Each structure stands twice: as C-alpha cells, then as structure tokens.
View (cartoon, rainbow, N blue to C red):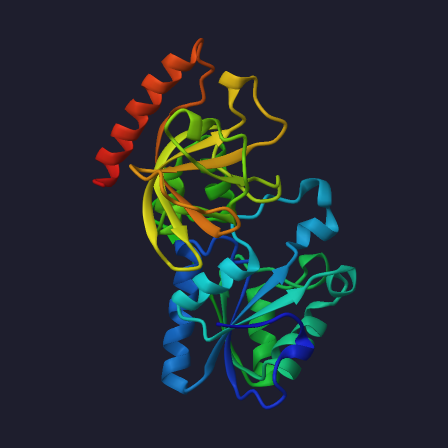
Amino acid sequence: MQIWRSLDDVPADLGRTAVVIGNFDGVHLGHRQVLARAREIADQRGLTLVAVTFDPHPMAVLRPEHAPTTLTSIEARAELLGHAGADAVLAVPFDRTIAEWSPAEFCRQVLVDTLHAGAVVVGANFRFGSRAAGDVAMLEDYGVEHDFTAEGIPLDGGPMVWSSTYVRTCLATGDVAGAAEALGRPYAVRGVVVQGDQRGRELGFPTANVPTDGLTAAPADGVYAGWLRRLDSGEVLPAAISVGTNPTFDGERYRRIESYVLDRTDLELYGVEVEVSFVERLRGMVAFESVEQLIVQMDADVDRARELLRA
C-alpha cells in the first residue's frame, strides 16, 4: 500500500482519481460502505482510488484536551483501507495552516491540484474547511466547477449509524464484541513486545507485554480471549489477554496488554511487533487474596479462552 505523507509526495503524473475523504479511524463498516461505492466508481471509470485521511486527528491540533484516543495508527489504517479497496493513501499532515483553509482552498489544493479528482465519495455527514464550513452540497457545487462528481453515503449500521466514537464507547466498557460488530472484525492493538516483570512466566503463564501509551484506545481493564499476530511472520496464535495494571501485585504505574499464547511457553517475542485482537471479554480485573487463587482463576480463563477460540 502506497502512503503519501504530504501533498508534495503525491506523484505529479498521477492520473485522474476517485477520492474518499475522512479520518477513517478504525475503518469501520460505515467507512467501508463509502470505500465500496468509490471502488465501484473507480472501476467503472478507470480511476485510481485514493483515500485521504489526516495525521494527527484534527482535534489533536484544534482542541487537544478533547482529542479522542486513536483506534488505528496511520500504518494500520492504510492497511485496512487497502483491504477495503483503496489503491493509495494520502495522510495529510494536519496543522493550523490547513485548519484555516476555506472549503474552496481545500478543494483546490487537495482534490484538484494534487489528486486530479474525477469523483469524490464521502460520508453523508462530511464537513470540511475552516470551521467545518463545507458540506456535501458545497462539495457537489465545487465538483461542477472543477469537473468531478461528488456524493455523500449514509453510514448506516442497521438501526444506528456506525462511528469511531461508538467503537471507543464500546471499548471503554469492555464490550469488544460490540466494537467488533461495528468494525466488521475484532478490535486490535499493535505494539512492540517489551520485557515485563516476568511474573506470568513464574506462574506458568508467560506473557507478551505491550505497553499502552494513553493515545491509543485499549479495552477496559479485564481479561479477554483473542489472538496475537506476529507482524514479522504473520503467524496468528490464540491467546488469553489481560489489560490493566496487575492489581494482585499492587499494580504498576502504567497499563499494559499482556497476552498468554495458549499452551506455549517456548516463544521468544521480545522486540517483535505484534497485533493483539480482542474477541470476547472473560471477566473484569480482580485483586486476588493469594497467588494460589490467581493461578486457579488463570487456569479457568485459559480454559474459557480455548473454548471460545476453539484452540
């Protein structure tokens, strides 16, 4: 997947394109409806499909105290956008200069001069330009002026509209099944495995530890069944996953995601980038009175994870 990190990175000889625009954080089912329509148009008209997103999230620049946690890094987002039909991704480096562009300036700079748009597809609630002054109707008018078609697609999700905010709300309560329903796949977090305190190894459950940075969304503290994927080899392994701060051992100063790969004690994962995906919540986080009680519960967690994952 080609990722362009600025307008200047886009090849000058890029032909006409079909363009989708949005934050696309998580690339949920609503986003994928937009991409499916754009892919259809691109195939019909022989256009390259480019997904335009923003890095960082505009709220991180305009109102950082209210910026949401992210569901996907730009790299993971580009991978998901590619799976959904995009040929390339333009990650516009969002700053206050771009925030001040009028809707007309945004159209000229991004859609006309850089991407040579022949078609633009966005969500029905799409807003753009300074103070979000532009909407789909305005985009359609610019399209008439600059020779591209434009349309807005409803982000339907049955009785509701799918959104990245909905996914974050599900994760905040540990409802990873609800998040997966909106995403069309289990929610996943990526990171490099670091050495922890090795208590899991001492208890017979060695874990791959991935710290959370506070900027990326993670499910509520608790224990989950899920999968660990090595990004170096693509190997996918069933896992029982703990999110939290180890309350039985008085907790740690930071939250982390600890994955015990079922029935494996031979893995060497330090320094390996992994993707941890969450299938179902097993229980909340509990401070046990003794290590023996913890081990009994961990055995039960592993059995339940094995049953859910049929591993």
